[in-house]
Image 1 (cartoon, rainbow, N blue to C red):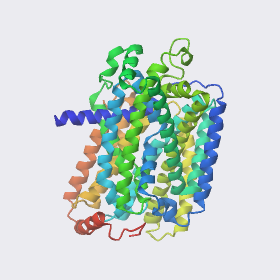
Image 2: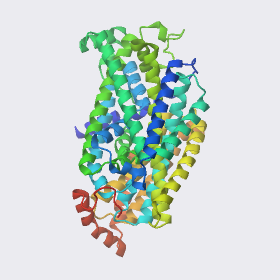
Image 3: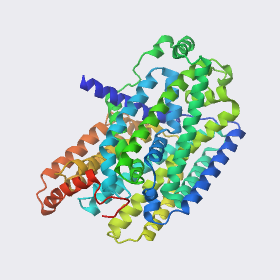
Image 4: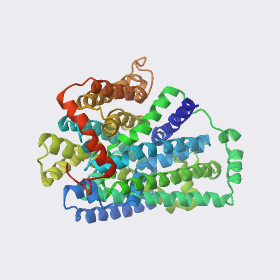
Length: 552
């Protein structure tokens, strides 16, 4: 029974990554210029740049820049975390899944929702009590600063790079489709705007842009769902009955089906998405923006509520698209396929229920969604370099705030240029694969070290270092040897590693490596590290010494 439940959760978790990715893959045809969408987009960008200017006036110290001075409330932070999840890809992808496969969409989205609060409840409170700006503060609390921070920074930068690729490619494809701009123009535009948010506004601006975007996306999706329900007189039975009548699969859409060909890959990606969440640097950073552990707990609770509500809306939108979009020839090409592919079902539904103005609104919000996510990612990458590598490793903790922020801003520009370059280079790459890789690395490198540093007293620097690096290298190595890179990109006949996603194997390697090399470590420093577990445990539970953003 338990095995079956775990398999279901693993498969369910798969959806968000696969379908979020699939939403924006494949060939995209450039569409005619969408004037209403561009006007809305300009208004939105203008408003967010005003927020950035406002935030820049309030950034007086490194604590303000990295953690918004710890002044964000639990509700605001919950909304910002939800904003990170309610991406355009998830909005388009899950509704597309419902549009094509019906009931499967709900199972998949709920499965993803189940996984992450459990993990974050394990971590959020202790993280807030122990850290300062990045999760490396927590992982290195009682361990060797130089070694652990170097590992965490490398893990974070690799995760951020792959996640950025997925977002940049997604932005380019969306803009091609919705705005009629060239792919390269779209990618450069995203890169420049992301740099502006992070350079001047820091975490405060990034958080508020995320909050506004989350509110707009929730409002737009709510309006669409209400209009769909109005069409069927607010009767769910009528909604499902009409959908069954017009869908080519008929009643089959009301029963769960097998959308996954390879169960081990699916379970592996499911694990990556569940546990990788707790290793994503841009999510973990958000817990330092609140004043204390109580607010950190609240933010998880609110985030779960908002994300759950959003996924219910996408389900209604998917069924609404079956009724209102699939039956309307205006949204189809000569061959009878949906314009822009099935993944544009939600966008066409916006047109069907609200006309071109509402279509423009949804298009602009979808783009803004990506902007907000890349700004958060860039800030996480910049803080890994400036706070972990520069301030703590190179300067041995003696760097002043001014120098730290300067390094952070230089890194931001470098990451912006890198993201634009990678976005153009990986134009044709499968986004699902990139997201899966980012999550697999986070689950295999960042998560085991972070979890065990807080919960296992026998952890030592040697164990964390060797295990963490084994997790990082095995995740990337198995991914390269897997079918996607080895066969599809490098054009070998057969993959050496048969599964697409390595997390199931690389996570086991990481945990076993950390455990084995920790228990066999008999050095003097290992004894000291084990002895420091109790004071760390007391602080993580009580928050003594952790009021506000504190150094340690």
